[in-house]
Image (cartoon, rainbow, N blue to C red; front, side):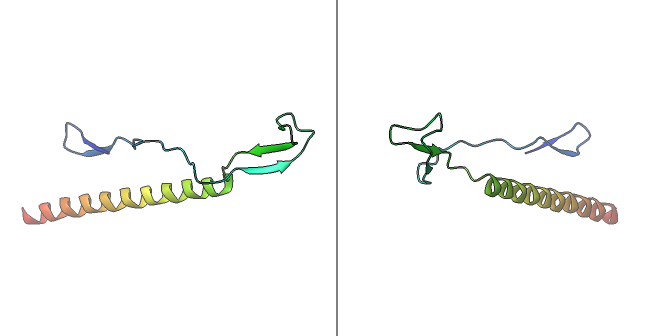
Length: 88
């Protein structure tokens, strides 16, 4: 999101979450460990369906894409300002 300051310059105001959707398709990992405190009657433990390494890689990819888009926009603004100065 961009907001204009009183001097006309654009400032990034951050990113907003559009919504959160539960993942009902990815299966949970189930291991057999009867000694685990969260084991069910069969001795199985259901672990989260979150792959930490994949989530971290996705986060880094999103961050890099955001930075690239921000740099592209800043470059466009600088080029537009130069063009306006040349037209004077």
